[in-house]
Length: 261
Image 1 (cartoon, rainbow, N blue to C red):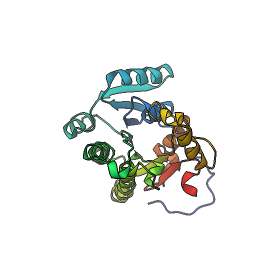
Image 2 (cartoon, helix red, strand yellow; image 1 turned 90 degrees about the vertical axis):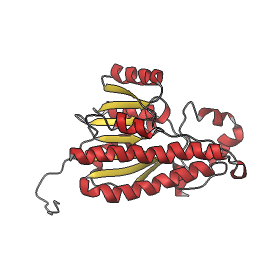
Image 3 (cartoon, rainbow, N blue to C red; image 1 turned 45 degrees about the vertical axis):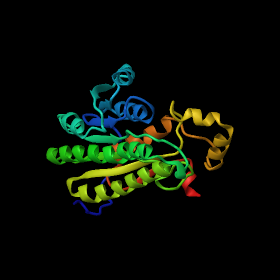
Image 4 (cartoon, helix red, strand yellow; image 1 turned 30 degrees about the vertical axis):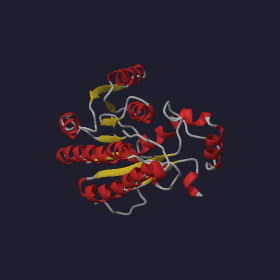
């Protein structure tokens, strides 16, 4: 560990480029995953796009390549542990993981069905856990460290009506994030989370057609607006890059101030 204190050397702003690194993005075919993939590709990483849907990956890969980036497509169902091991574990190199695949099924707590509970928890927690495990093994084997970024949520820090299962899953990710950070630090693998507020995507946009929902959401965000996909892209690049070299076990909320109240 370099803990030498000096005032002699000139200071240099840490680099946020990701040139020469390989970044795996799960759920990369749409929404937040698409934004994460475009972000790291724009910073120079070779991006491995992971999804079950080939047509979605074709679209995102074409978008990245049109902007001058490099993308590979990997068809993989991250709810299938054998596929995770064979396909993600079979990659030749992984330097960055954006553990993004997830889902939601809002309903009142007293009406939550076992099937919806299992659907959300299996993808948001179980799949995320084992994707991270497979990638961590690869990073340890490589011996060069790495950066793992979990897609959490502001709902990993607060509660909300009709989102008991989702909140449960994202609070679990926040705990996983901290425990992984501590355990993997000796291997120079940094583990952090991003917690967005409502980001406008094809999945979330219909919620804002409801005037009551929109008014309630905006009343909770001091900055007075919901998020756009671009709002998370800089945070992703920062946590993936050497600019965050001493940050691990942290959760960066990109929430317009929702959780500050």
